[in-house]
Length: 96
Image (cartoon, rainbow, N blue to C red; front, side, top):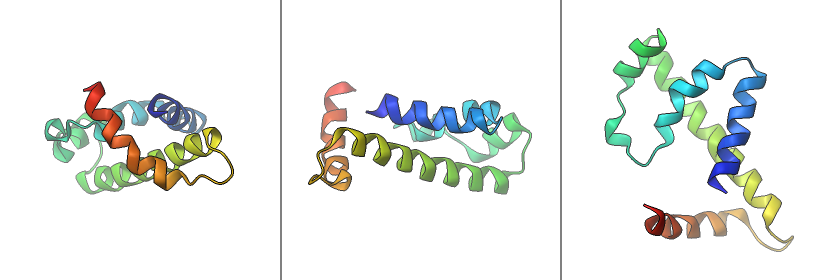
């Protein structure tokens, strides 16, 4: 599910001709957020730090939308993606 949502997000950025931005922002959705710095990412992407913060916010928001969309594609009509999304973190403990 996570791979599918990430692929959808990557496709969105690719279609918008922003593949480089996707590559730069992808680590910001990692569970290892302690390795992430807005200032470092801004330097890496050649952007202002404020612009990076906004880009990260939008990236994460769009990732959440892609995750909900991927979940909806696998659920029955009477199931809600929010309920499944609350269950998902318990599965990630076993993956890590």
